[in-house]
Every structure is written in C-alpha cells, then in structure tokens.
Image (cartoon, rainbow, N blue to C red; front, side, top):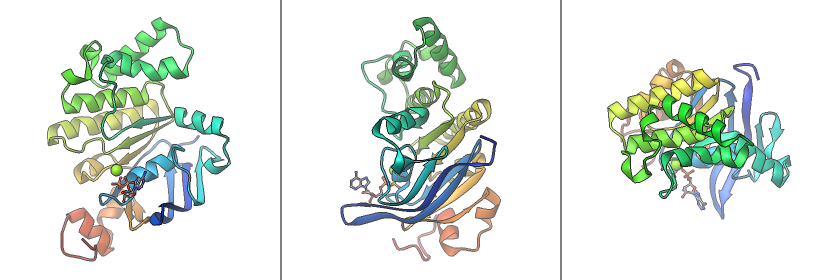
Length: 253
Ligand SMILES: Nc1ncnc2c1ncn2[C@@H]1O[C@H](COP(=O)(O)OP(=O)(O)O)[C@@H](O)[C@H]1O
Ligand SMILES: [Mg+2]
C-alpha cells in the first residue's frame, strides 16, 4: 500500500461494555507507513481502539476496515489471520516468565511461519540486535529492567515484519532517558520496516518526537486529528487543556 493511503479506517464506530458506552461516533483514518499517536485520558478507550484495529473486539455499530477488509465481514479464521498479521506491543510486555528472551521473541515465528530453526535463530538475533538486546537472548524476563522488557516486547511484536504494528503505552512508567530510547526504537521500526505504526500514549514529549499524525480521543470519539503542529496550535480548549495537563478547563475531572 502506498505511503499515506488509509490502511486502517474506523467509521462512526460504537462499542459498549454492557450498558456502558465506551466509544461512540469514533472515526479515524490511519495513513499507511506513518506513525499515528492516539492520546487521551485514562479510561477513554485507547486500548479498546487498538483491540478493534487488530480484530480482538468487534464494533457494535460502524465499520472497522483494515487493509481493505471490513473486520465484521471476516470469518473466525480470517480474524485470526488478521490478528497474526498485526504486531502488538502490549502495555505490560506480557512475556512468558519461564522462557528466555530469545524463545519469547521466537514464538510468533514458530507459530505463524514455516521457518527452519536456523532461520528462526538468525531472525531472532537480528531483531534483538535492532532493539539493542542482542546480549540478552539467553536471559529470563525477570533478569531485565523495565525498559529492556519493553524492548523485548517490541522485538516480539515486529519479529514477523508485520505491515502494521500497534504499541499500547510503550513508555508508561519509565524515566525520560529510557522513554527517549524507546521512542527512537519505534521511529526506527517505522522507517526500517516501512511499517504503519499506531501508538497509544499520554507521554506528550514522546508523541511530539515521533508522531506524523496525532488523534485525541475524548468522550468516545476522536475530537481532533492532525500533525503535531496542527494539534499544538489547535484552538479547541479541550485539546489545549489536555496538552498542557491543566486541571482547570472544560474537561470534567
Ligand atoms: N473487557 C472489558 N469489560 C468491561 N469494561 C471494559 C473492558 N475493557 C475496558 N473496559 C472499560 O472501557 C473503558 C475504556 O477502557 P480502555 O480502552 O482500557 O481505556 P484506556 O486504554 O484509554 O485507559 C474503561 O472504562 C474500562 O473500564
Ligand atoms: Mg489502556
């Protein structure tokens, strides 16, 4: 798909858990080959939006179109194939404690490809190198720092070279230096793989550093979308209150 064409489209999506409406009238176009950051308050539905994109949840109304296919029209087997074709770096790296970093990163290759053991070993090594973890291939998750675990989670998300990679709060709870490093790794994944990247984050420094597009999720819908410059110069008071982290303003706290 040509860079800039919409590879993901959410159209007037509604999603509720029981009678609690989480997303309503949400529309968003994600351009191929770029980094789109979704920002918003805790509990606003950011992680749920990522799950819609990879077919882990289906909308109750509206359409979610990924790589030209409406997820609601996919068979269960096609939904599984969609999920496998999208890299997902979870908020809490979600590594298997009893497996080495190398074996954790190898899992998607063992499950989804017919690569030989030699090819898997080489691909895992190369992927760990790309996130600066080449020396950690034989270590267990418990032996890594928080930032290293995040990087191992990134490696597992990209080891199959997916066209789309989703990151859920990749820098939350980490210091500014590690945050900067992880942000650079995400930029590198976008450039090197040409991957379409969607990042959920409320770390504005990191968002300003990496985003081609920024979308603000508020009360169930995307209320502002644009380049970093456009969002920063928005005259929408909700956008400005969010960017400046002020407690005074139109956002009910
Ligand atoms: N599986 C679920 N069952 C019921 N409620 C859920 C479920 N997942 C999320 N929610 C609710 O949906 C809202 C949005 O959640 P989430 O997408 O995780 O928000 P965010 O990632 O922006 O913090 C929250 O109020 C959360 O409690
Ligand atoms: Mg979340």
